[in-house]
Length: 134
Image 1 (tube, helix red, strand yellow):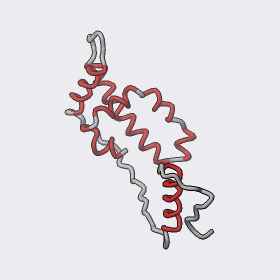
Image 2 (cartoon, rainbow, N blue to C red):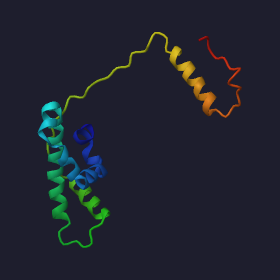
Image 3 (cartoon, helix red, strand yellow):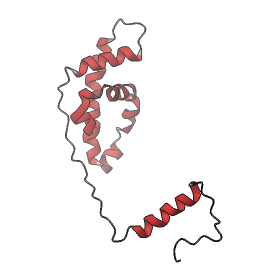
Image 4 (cartoon, helix red, strand yellow):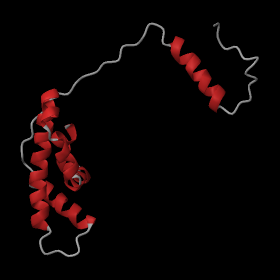
């Protein structure tokens, strides 16, 4: 949603992909999904707004053009982004924070050495190998 809300005019390839895959997005618009995840409704409304605006512009912009190529469609979308001014619903983004364990080396050190052992290309005799106390 951030790409739609804040950077849509700078992402014509995203708009092209959305217009191109409009049918796949319409499959997401089902009531069970909306009841289980209410924020999804706002996101799908934003998709609908974008698809309606750019779908109309592409249809009008390509009238009478034969054959239609990806480049022509992308150019129509780029031109349409100059007049894009439809407000989209801002969706509160979830925030995640990283909390470091007290001793991350207990996981990372053996893990990294196991990667060296398996993928490092250094011939170790695994019968005689003892990295850490078990």
